Length: 66
Image 1 (tube, one colour):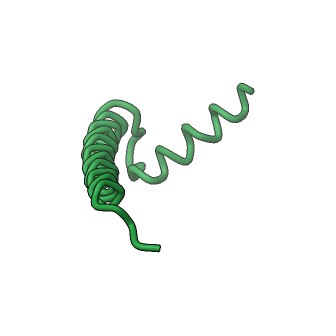
Image 2: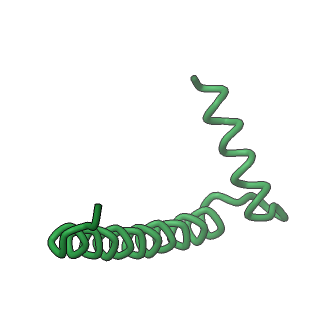
């Protein structure tokens, strides 16, 4: 059975809404990640420690507290 024009229009609108939401979500998460990495790099790394090493150390310390 053929879809009505209204159903097709609603599907197109839903697709655009979901795509727009995903773009916004990616932008927000990406921005947060940049801020988080800059903060860890600037304030939480110890002498000679890389960003990845600092994140791993912080995760271990956090897990040890739980």
